[in-house]
Image (cartoon, rainbow, N blue to C red; front, top):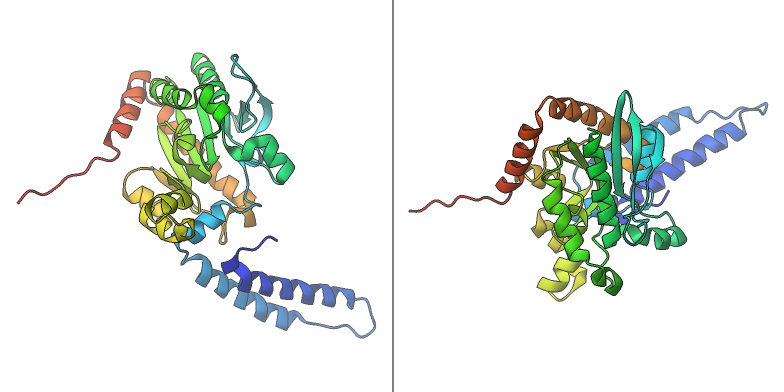
Length: 324
């Protein structure tokens, strides 16, 4: 398993337990059987205690590292775990199909939906193919085209956000990156069907917000949602990206902070250690939340849905000052 720096004591203990189990299994068929169950149980108890000590007291920077973990489930992983009969749809009908955003029609339980989200790669080759989850303008235009299709057929929309940000290359700028994101912000407010959003990893800047206007916004326990990456913030404020951990603390980008400030509606619980340690349980938690949200939103009229969505985003960032 790919371990992070602060996980090293845990991974070392897990490896030791695995070695003892293999050793016991190897000698179980011999005349003199070796029983290491007591030693294994003792180490497993120690491991559980250590996991709680480490993972229940994570700093914002450590949560960001978990959000970026290479084995963390991505959009297509969740689609596979949650749904059946995924029919992928392609293209913006203007320029190309952006592989950094995947979308299609699915059935989750008895509910038919349009699902979409950012998609990263597992290795260098796939990351290049997926552009590291950084969408081009054609990706945002594809997303809007399909959301309007869902609106036409009264299909709820499920969105997974996981991107460090929109692609900042010259070609993307030439094809109208800023305009594509801005257009989506305006048009998504007016989509007359429920939109439910889950930030499953990185929620970076306008790249996330370009498909991030919805009726319910939930963030996984170890995901983050921010106007800028910690490295980018550190480079601007301190001219030193090595101060990313300080920036992560100052940005208040963890799920707990976001809920406290009213930016999001819900925190989705992850297994101890992160979603990559138990993807199925994480998917189950998302499915339960999704069912509840779709039921609540489907009871609203179209006018109520749009008005509540508009009011939700108008309230974000409102502060009050006491005048003496």
